[in-house]
Image (tube, rainbow over all chains, first blue to last red; front, side, top):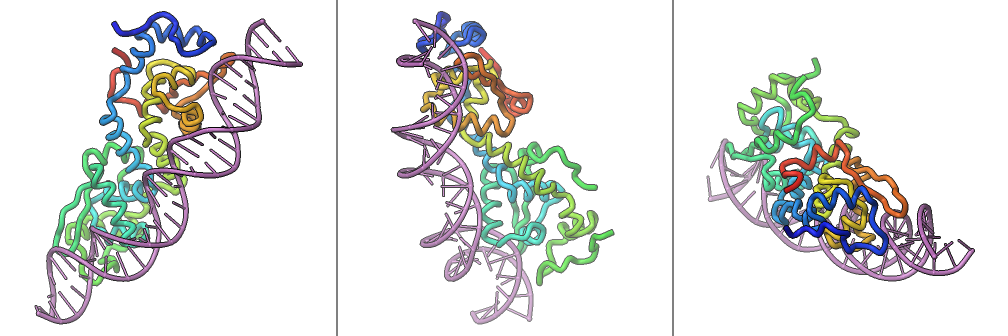
Length: 126
Length: 126
DNA sequence: CAGTTATTTCAAATTATTATGAAATGCTTA
DNA sequence: TAAGCATTTCATAATAATTTGAAATAACTG
């Protein structure tokens, strides 16, 4: 409907035939662009990947996949400063990979369903 | 074998009972730590997520999922400077999300199997 | 209530990532 | 082979993410 199925006015040189052909079939440039997620969707997807793009956070994810853990145990396991750990936990919580609840003085972090989807490929335990 | 199944010497206060209990079952702190991927594995996983953590790159991924495309068509679709696009394409290629081949003056980028795994959840077309 | 503990918050310093525009590369055609 | 084209490379500037350590919270204990 909106697609320009003749040569797109992209270049001075004709673009490779195969590309042009396939492009025509999906409604030209505008047809192609319509396949993109919205900016909001993109942002959400990317935010999730960003949360998963740091080795410290990935370690945390793999740990809480085994069992729910208080901050001090996570700290003992990966050996970083409290504030640093807190920073990373906050990012993961914000994007929904983990959740937390308080138990006395302790705060216990658990993996979420969303988090489980992204910690695959390794045995949970021996 | 290596796990300390009695109270781990983490804190001055005893850690929450449930956490302690589950921890004992998997061989204590050391048992828990053994569930972590190696540094190399972690780095590889995180690098992949990093490549997916930018909206421009995610757009590119969704575009080449529809069909193989030359740089100029991608550029026409998302409207950014050549060098910027090149920068992002290079990151995606390095992490194996896309591959490229030359056709005359044009370079055509295609999604890889690895890339397909990470561009799910949207119709390919329509 | 005063002190201790586990965790978070904050501002500043550090480091990593991205953007920009000019120049370079490599292919193609006349 | 000179000129044009699509794309990349490079150095630098701009921006964003992470680290750090000190101070703040909030829950518990005596």
